Length: 129
Image 1 (tube, helix red, strand yellow):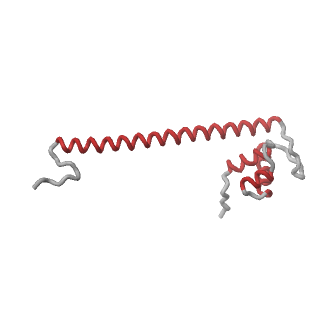
Image 2 (cartoon, one colour):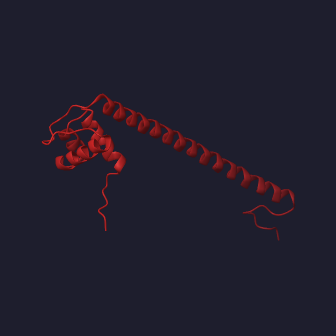
């Protein structure tokens, strides 16, 4: 049985990219997200391998080739764009749900009116005796 991390592959890559692009240090990511430095270093090394970035044997090489920087920036832009689209879709879904609720209320009102005019007693009223 494989270990299930609470961090998705995308989030690990995003945090590693922060370190690789020198936006944050390993220590800052570790403290901010409550992850051990060793774990963050592992994510960074794995991400560097994915991006084809050569690393020093001691892990102290913090320079990135321009192509790798462009790849990191492009992936980040893609993630940001995807998050914006997702937020837009969530907003659209909420609007659609609200419209549906209003339509359901209108339909219920129309049903009551139709029953009244068709000679049936409206709901909630007791028939006269």
